[in-house]
Image 1: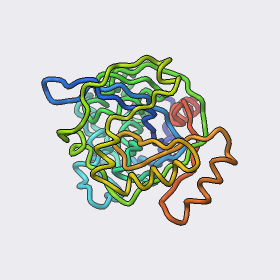
Image 2: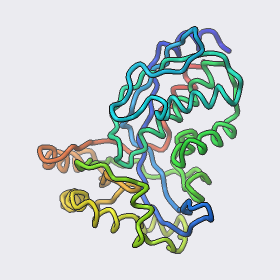
Image 3: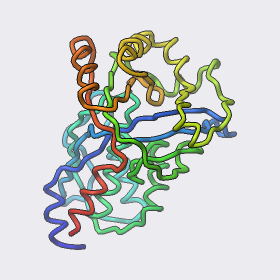
Amino acid sequence: MNASFEDSAWQQKWPAPAKLNLMLRITGRREDGYHLLQTVFQFVDLCDWLKFHPVADGEVSLKKAIPGVAAADDLTVRAAKLLKAETGCKQGVCIEVEKNLPMGGGLGGGSSDAATTLLVLNQLWGLHLPKEKLLSMGLALGADVPVFVAGHSSWGEGVGEKLSEINLPEQWVVIIKPDCHVDTKEVFSAKELTRNSKSITMPQFTGGDHQNDCLDVVCQRYPIVKGALQALSQFSAARLTGTGACVFAQFDSYEAAAVAFDALKDKWVIYLAKGINESPLVAKLELSKR
């Protein structure tokens, strides 16, 4: 491995961006209980930031555990241990996470952290695993991890792992995080959840079909999410990302997004961000290797 990359990379902060589901249809269910989906992923420029500190004892640890999450269950720890198990790597790491993305919000923060761990440690540890292997390892950690490993806005099918790269308008986005934690498992277990939506095509999506089959279940069980949607919809069409709790609206200009942000910022936990097609991690990894 390039020594200059190794030296500089251990000292850097690495981005783990958020994602939005711009559409989410449930088209069926597998025998193992997993739901078959159609979805559209786009990144936004809100990020957690990770630093990786080499340790001599070969162990994997967190510098500071996330409240409410056991270290052994943390997706970054699981990702690093999976890399070691798959490759026989003897190196250790202490992982430091600057957590900016809300948990239980549907922005994919934990999955993104895991993907950043896989991609960066693959380089730092000199493992040179191909992207295809990292994608399959990501899926073993969670259905949302592969898109962060892939690093580009994607049309997703299967359980979210069948990804086709797409380019979308990079609009400004206002995101509200209601004061609740939506239980994804509960939503997907709901009897009233629609599980037989017809598949659509990309032109149908770009033509305005932005259906989210989880919306009704989430709004019924979490009235505060419904309130956030109503508040944001005064300014632009508001949608739920994944199973929530976060809701978002897109805007063609920063100025229009800022009007909504300013009007709502005193009442809600709210973010003003930019939709982006390429994960900032992709560019940073390439730059660091030069």
